[in-house]
Length: 588
Image (cartoon, helix red, strand yellow):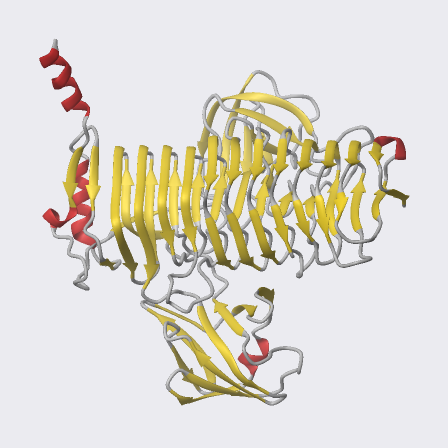
């Protein structure tokens, strides 16, 4: 029996594969792409394996790397250009694999995806960092500023040239003359919306190494010495990491020092854990921005999404976005089959429904359900459309223009013990019907709402309603300098229906708000909303303001202001009987 026990234990132990044995050489500046593919293929031969990388810098070029045609939510442009991506670590149909970086730094060249997990399960990536030799984000610092002349110093990573008096940025295999800019105010430690037009229209000339002078007309308030402009092409054609139709994935102690196109995108994946994942510039790099857009993006996932002890600093868009996708009905044939279409130009090309999925029919104007069904079949008929067959009859009232949400692929979400800072947009976006907990986090200098709960079927088409949300024991510090700093619940329902609400059961308790303008909560179309036991710190006399539209069963009680001022609740489109509050109630 002992022999059988040890034989069984040995059979279950993962086989250790050392990347150096397959030609991966750290600190060599050699292209490790082919060697990494060989090492990953060796792992496939075993039921369970650990791929161990050598510590140090490992360079990866697109040449010799794995390549796949990928359609990725929120970052697939609607054009005829190739959607083939080059990938440093491709895990396709891999199971029971750990990649242990041993502290290695993977330096990507060109526009590459760090890792892609496709139809794989029980995958762990740990102790590893990723960066780009030439990030697609360029940065320049204002040295001297006047109304007709700006002297700027380019970051050494930001390769550029001057073409006929115009600034052109370039990298490994790319060039751009189109600029989307975000300004970093170093004195205020804030990222703000900006414009590249004055620099694009000005005459540029290089005066020294990494020094450019722009001559034109500049408004005094536009820039000041010390400001840093962060500049990228607005075209989204990639992502930092990709997890699709995979389950039981853990990223642990992973550092993403730059991500191009979008962040780590999980798409129709199940049970994703990010623990001690950092998105921030590499220490000593001198850079401000680490993410071209979002940091952690979850589209149509299920099971559990766990973000714990993570940190993001320096993103051009939201650190976290969790959502589904509304597809619009464009055809109903005589047999009851539906044709549904992806509506946003950057989200399409992947299956959004599967056999036996439960779905809800949604009125795009009210965002309220019109019925439910289960799918007998689902198939992608082209990059923009799917054909769905129902089990049973089509509910009454469903017509072209109605939208469909996938109810099966909605996750539980838990975001804890993390820090979100230095972004010009929001902190967390979340729309999921299952339990959501946002607890013990710090939101510092998010330019807009630190938390947004939306839902829409007319813009990004990001679904859906929430039914059980707890926002507890977080710190919101000086958020909203680009807009509202309040927690915002803002479904884009263009028609309100009396007695019916988009979102339900949202509890906001025990948080600290260090507000710059006294705005702490804005909510629309919520049934069951609690805002209690929070501490609100504002400038003396500013008070605290809560704005509610068409909500019901609201409690605003026992919140503490640390400075003199009134706590006021402004309501619109709802009865005063729908709220219990110890603050000043203003009915508009």
